[in-house]
Length: 550
DNA sequence: AAACCTTCCAACCGCGTAGTC
DNA sequence: TGACTACGCGGTTGGAAGGTT
Image (tube, rainbow, N blue to C red; front, side, top):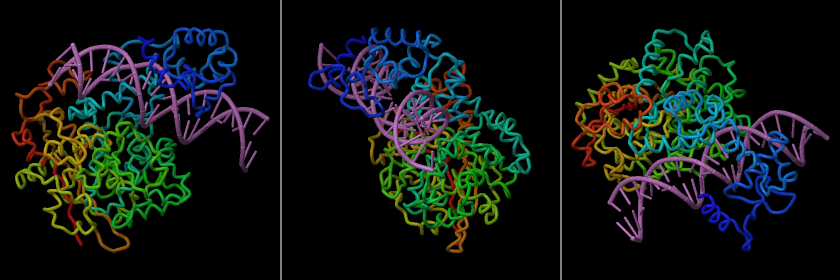
């Protein structure tokens, strides 16, 4: 097996018919004893490396080549040892328990594979990463949420718990407690961002990923206690490395959001922190909607922000370097300038805006209780009023003045911004929306996939979290009401699926380690006749509001 | 049977960080 | 303080294998 692939690799990497020769030396692959080999390892090489490590121990990998004559760079040696030769490695597929653990860890840590691996003895970061990416892809295809029902349930429980909390941002909650309480918070639907259509295309320049890969817990903690060393966030944002300073984190942002974002400059010394603090966690913490317009849903770990695949030229380099998972690449499919799919950046923009700004200038929608029933109600109302959403409006380039369009119009076009049944932070949002567009024949970049969400529609109780964004410069207020996708998952997992006759294989697959054989009892997919035809999916349950008030 | 597609996974690459000088 | 080095991490790539059409 290996020999075959090896030969291919050798052939591929060969230079002048010299196998085992590496033509490049990037990444410190310069060898002192000649060219370094790349590609699959042979058993002989493995033996050499094992022998070396046995004698000299781990570390000093660059010395391997010198001491053993192994034509491999230190980097490669380390990787080989860590991922394959280490004696304590656990081989074989992940157990259900391990899978569950991975998911839990991902909720907490995001794409911190090494940290996750540390929690899973015998497993490597690469292994976990591959597993996760595969899982994401699979669920994306299936149109399923990343996080399983029980976690959803826990998230809801936590939500209810926190709804009764006051001053959650006062920092009186211990980090550990907070973390423990939010371990299962579903950062689902980070894609509940504001409709990009509501904002100028420049908003797309905002590196949503900078926040979306941050574990929910980290952000939440940040929001609670600024003393928490939110390395994840800081590192992700790289604010200190941005020569433009904190405000530049919103580089590319302009009106109307720009006014809001500019508020970030209020915290010149700790932009990211402030931003975190400004995050809303309403899903979980909108116990006090007047003071804490949290957007918990935005706090999705591992969210590979859907950058809408539109790496604008104006996007800062650092933004592009932010944690962009491979999935994001896939998401790029809806990055077309004309894609009706939403941009996380837009929501992130608001999310990133200082809380104080929001709290001071915002008055939540009266319907904005954040309670599930309220959301359900609203969703139902929308459903009744509109049975179909016009998702395909090529209005992704809609100018700012769309904000002044009627709320009705906005409703129709906005649902697409939300729902991301797959990923909490939005990477999946792309999947759902892209899938929708596929079904409706509106995909710009990809052909409809019969495989994607076949006859499957989630009934999503859209929660509407509204807040007003004060447009500092214009002196106007724009109330942006957006749904609470984070609840969508939970609801979708807790019996909101309507059609019991549908095949639950997808869900079963998705919830594998979390559900028993009676999966179908709890999770059902909805079949809408419209969905099969790609028209009029009952996505209006995703409905969202965008009310613009001059 | 062949072509195509999907999944899995090993390996590579670039970058960030810590340590050292 | 800056340059250099080693190491680690996360994202990405590409081939093998298996499945589907």
